[in-house]
Image 1: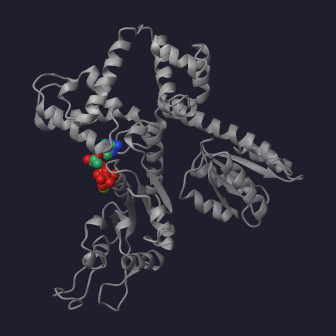
Image 2: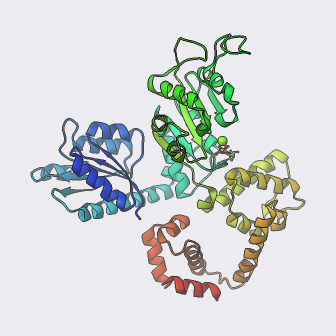
Image 3: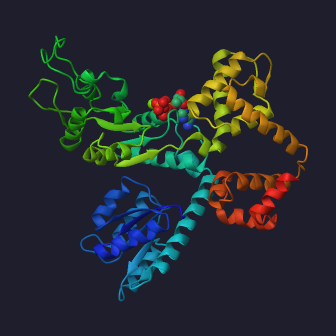
Length: 467
Ligand SMILES: Nc1ncnc2c1ncn2[C@@H]1O[C@H](COP(=O)(O)OP(=O)(O)OP(=O)(O)O)[C@@H](O)[C@H]1O
Ligand SMILES: [Mg+2]
């Protein structure tokens, strides 16, 4: 399975569709559009690793698409599809920054190979720029901690959507930081000086959902003793975060759809439509696609909301962020409590790294805070962590292994590196792509190191651990 997001720009339907399928089969995320205009529009909404574009199209041609891509995000690679006779233009395009071109007719194998190389080059470039600090600083948001590739990707899209007006759907398990990201979008957008309103749709009583969101006119129902302005109007020129969007009632969904179509709302009991200028960010920790399938959520509304999707992966899938987060919360809490210096013991850190974190960052924050509050001495040990009992038992078993292993650790750097790779390979069942992501190195580097340390097969990996 390959990783990466590709945009295919091709005006011939059959050709475009077959390319989209070919890329999908390889595991890429793919979108296809039929014109240069559409392509340029998409660039404003999404970040791609690779754009594959036909050179010759009506109106907006491939060269213009190339220019727009490089403008939107210089590190996105472009591969051109040329016909016989336009090769000289393709050569020019490469001077203008395209990665490569393929000449029609071509076999899928050929373009897949070029695409793969282009994406590898892009991720290498990103990695280098990241290490040089350029991306890290560019996508930095105050109060959002995270250094993993996964989080970097989230921050990249976040910083991108700050500059657009698109509706955004933020997904992720409970406590992963959906509201934090929504806030970051609002407070870094041109709307920042206007209100940011948060409403948990799941927490609204059913009979009040519509009136809370869209307001009501006096006398429209028992208890409506005066006109009431809804949250959409309160968020005028600002942003409204519709949390748990999946919990909205069918009637509310109709109203949301109408708002997204023509920017108008209708207060309950009112017959006049009111125009409001409010940006919607929707959030959910449920699978909205499933809600659509089961008929609980309108499909047309889903499409309108799912324009840009920011998915925040659970903490257990980006464990390399854990030490940073622990340190961040520790520092904050010490400042707040005016406590003396505190550090977590090595074993405590190990427990943090290995715990599953079902409640994600919120849970981590709570545990760090409680551990600090309860601590009596400078070093906080693993038995002082307020982790759930059964989880703790499992972790303690691991700790015994850890202690055992530790006494065998030869402290050369190379040895540590080797062990880290073996551990990760073991943990992820030998999946090298995953391991390289977790360790923050490219697959090529990982492969070189596996060779260098003669880590040959799963079998040998297990042998190593048993030693
Ligand atoms: N990357 C991060 N860096 C620092 N703090 C974070 C990060 N992610 C989340 N937090 C903190 O964790 C807590 C939970 O985040 P938030 O409320 O945004 O989660 P959520 O996804 O909206 O959760 P829920 O689905 O339960 O509403 C907040 O205190 C937030 O500040
Ligand atoms: Mg939330």
